[in-house]
Length: 324
Image (cartoon, rainbow, N blue to C red; front, side, top):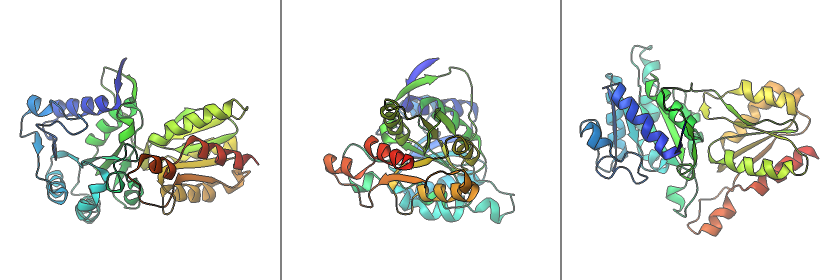
């Protein structure tokens, strides 16, 4: 298998789907001539033409609305939001139209749109370019939300998302773009709504996703030196969320730490803990622990940025608390 970056896996997935289905097209700010600020769509306009890879004006509300309408009439748009923070500008189209159309028309209309959104903290790009707002969309019935963390997962899940008849938001952590991994050269897809066990262990389960999967791995390696065995569940998909895999792990370890980069107040970490307690309170030998960012806008200063967000030491402390 080829070893490529997560950034390259996204490009591969989109290129293959553009070639496979003439109804697939890409649009967003700077996706065409410039090839995206992260280089993800570079070369696709030249390869597929200006009608398939479309540079739009700087109006997320307008081009997301165009994408929703195109999806309703049978196209499969790939809409890129430059930073996930700017999803706020398209909320009405996403939440009130894309998510609800199929339900309101009794399934006679579908909205097969994929909205790609780089998210997360890193690089000192300040409060308006550093948010983790994935939990907002997990709250909305009718949407699907994915957060793949490896090149293999990103390519397979993005292809599945493009072929799905529901609106899917694909959150891509900016720190993950340069991560490398093995990706098959042949055709493959990964179903949405299925978690992955990144590390098997017997003492404590860590439930996490996206970039925090790698931070959790660092914590697990440190704890292993002390004889503490950690199982890591990478959710990959937040809506639907694979609670079967989560609960099977907790049935083995009887302890759980939920890790998110989002601020803890109102985050998906609380929803996951609530569901774990409802499904399997008797499985727990200790109260569940949560790790997340502080409830503050992300500072521009990178030292303060690091101070606000979860580190391996925070995860290690939470694991130890479950073992007290």
